[in-house]
Image (cartoon, rainbow over all chains, first blue to last red; front, side):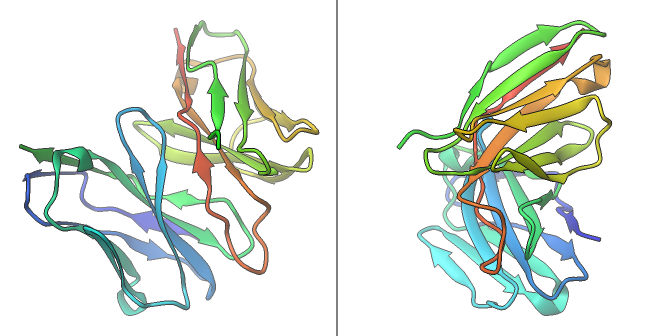
Length: 114
Length: 117
């Protein structure tokens, strides 16, 4: 069965600090897809990244970076030099190969203070 | 390019009533999924529609139903509302069903916030 765990319920940092959001997943499939979404106060989930299980290369996009490690079933998300606009709830999610049904983690609420 | 549009954004109902929520996907997107978000249970998958057919269903009672029209617009209905149905209902669209190239990126709407009194 699929399962996504985001152990950090809430994180608070001061602007310009780096912050890492943890995500640990469970699945029996060898082919699966991992996602990160951001949910600002407006409620709309905003897509950040999709990574398939065969691509363990880390990715950097501006201040955002993702570390995918199959050995530890983790897909962590780091924001460098955080900004107030990064304040939101961040969700990690998992989908199996032939299924758009996403299994979401509980989310991590990030607050960036000025 | 217009995003996923959900209506109404907010609504209040009483126990026992029914409610219908609407979702217009991104133009060209043929798959529509629905999710329920509550503080206690988080984000949970309700169902997915493609070509007017339900393709996948989550673990929700039969009071939750949906449909998709030929223009890919979708509606979901909840009958005999209970207090626990109070939630943010999110609709998401994608180009197609998941296939050999894998699960698709879902684009979400802003949601319909339902309060049941």
